[in-house]
Amino acid sequence: MDKSYRYGVIAGIFSGITWALYTIINNLITKNTIFNSYIEKMFIPVLVIVFLHDFFSSIWLFFYLWRKKKIFELKKTIKSKNIFLIFLGALFGGPIGMSGYLLGIKYMGASYTASFSSTYLIVGTILSVIFLKEKINLRMIVAVLINMVGIFILNFQINEMDSNKISILGIFFLMLCIFGWALEGLIASYILKYKNTDIDPSVAIFIRQLTSTIFYSFLIIPYIGAYNLVFIVLKSNIVLYIALISLIGSLSFFLWYYSMSIIGVARGISLNVSYIIWTIIFEIILFNVQFQLNFIVASILFIVSVLLIAITPDEKECLSNSIDGKV
Image 1 (tube, rainbow, N blue to C red):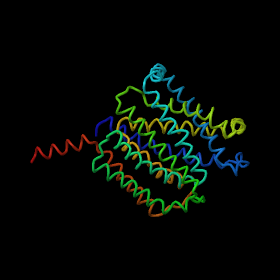
Image 2: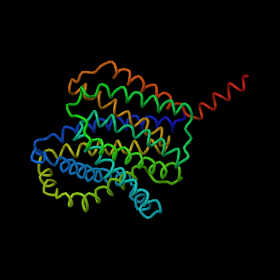
Image 3: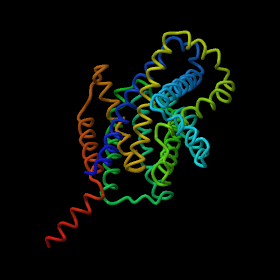
Image 4: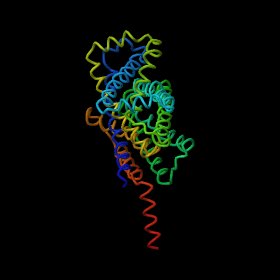
């Protein structure tokens, strides 16, 4: 396997692991008693958490860029023609996709949300074929289908793992999440892989998080009148947990962008959606949640799909050529 391609595959898998951990911790945060007075307006604390997540994430990423001496690259990127596309991707992924994901967790629970939101794999794959002309061979199609079958199988078990029920409002937010993330992946991959730019994934992620923070600061938070809650959270111990998940979330985003910059949208998303498996594994380990045979089957299917994705096109061509040569 090509070395850079291998790194892309590994990054994609770990983007799923870190996002699952983020999902579990965030679900616990939304249930904190500090938000009890907002039980009839559950979207307010969720959006506050998103805002603070992106705010702290921007801080972590800026220190990373400063430490790695990439501030010049940041200035160069901001002045480039690609900045509008990065802003657009940030809006799709942050205020739209991320808000939809966390509101989905609030209304439907972590496992339901992790499961259904992972269908952005299909949307992202279709968009990459249409707009990026990304070549999807039979092996990749089989890998995507295997992934989706695994997700379908898991949906028969998840109702035992979450006390929350599926709601129309929850489905609406999940649709925002699915299309938001798919469009963000499309734009990110176009900039980092197909447009032949020298933009570092960490720079792109910082601009994404900063754009989202500004959007929330001046539009969403004032509109819902939530700055009072923001200051309450900042004065409480829960802010430490939000700072923690922002660090985990930043790492997950970076790994996802890095993966897509090397192996493309469809493959990067296919590996990233492993967070559904990891979310359930973390729930089993941390909360002693019971699992059934369908979880084992779905896990095996995911492993098979990863193995299919891990075979680079070049390797397949080389194998084919070597066989032809022998014949």
